Image (cartoon, helix red, strand yellow):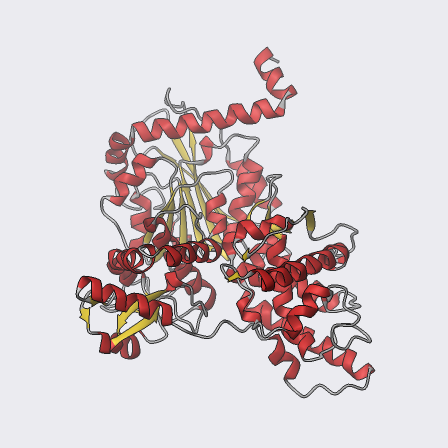
Length: 600
């Protein structure tokens, strides 16, 4: 063994740093040569790389093109009817591709083996393609990289890879590849090998050959759904606490996905603010306890519930609407102290009870790991994510988090039904009668009143200052008498009254054309500059509204708090794509529909 290799073997941290430097060097080399390489890549016929395996691709849906380069394959996939997420770490390639924007292609700066930004989108894909990428992933990183790819596939989804064999360019180091290695990784993840084929190099390099591999995920493949079903229906329950914890995390996955970040140990897991879990816990239990619905044997009201101490009891007598307990809300000192105490009490109960006793099937291993901090005192309370991190974090297994994100529309009713059944069972033992449907009604996740008043006031202010205001969807001027404030993402599909989701719209367009439909990718692309301009004029020009706008964006959209408006618009479009995928919301096309009109 050479001395350098021995050092890398002896010190794994040194090895990881060395490999990371190689990755950075390769990306920098592609970036520097992006103009020349893009011309070479784009000169190849569209679809030529996947020509002999295209018949195995699904008929449309959402595709992930990793290492998208010049965008050649992404454009080809879009022409086949896919909505495409194009991942490319080299800025030069992304700049080249953005020169001719495509409404059905979204570009993302991310890389293997982590693909952290892709995973934060909470999307699953019908097709994943990797053309000339795998040779840039080190052998040690490949199991992790493959696991990341497998977890992004839908049941029945296709993974198509091309493997390069031959000498590497001097400026772009490569690692050896083999079909047998990929097949072994596929088998370990329960994937089916559909086809393996070899081909000559399309750029006429005699010393380079290619191997194409097509894999399919036959079913859920993760065990997450049986785990959810076991927690909800199978586990022994001395209270509703396990259901409360699982539902709080499920609501975060749906409403505040940006709160989840990859776990610090680089495992396939995410961590979320423990304070946010406690906040949603209080929000769920407050109406139940106010109504006297039992949450444990011999419980009626707050007595007998470990979390119902001074803070929670103060909120019971308060006129606080539970829907006000949301990320981005601000409270004065008196109410803040009660909320802080109630969240802290909930966190203590969560750690001691459901997080402690929720285990994997036939195992003593806990499903959720908790790292608690001591929450600092404060005079007021802003329910933003940094504040909610003050209690610590809870780690959620990656496969469970993805299941809660993707299948929330089916998991939520199961949780509510079982929670209501438990409540009625506890009540019957105490001879308490719960009217039919009362428990389920109290368990409903009610949003704040559907008000657009703040956005309307902002529209009137903009109209006075600029002399007019325009519909974000059509660009036409709108008189205030004909002005509606529209939810860009329809309230019926995702009840969100955050400022970023509210925009001026012509009443006829809102009520007779768009209605409760989801704007198509084409409509979104055409409206991009108008949406960004509205945010700037209506919200960011006002100090108080700008602060609220930022808090709501960082909580609800997959984007950093420091993001600019262009990045926030992209995050809004990601959320649109997720609604389209998860709920099959009908789309609104102002013009003739593109072939991408449906996603299965």
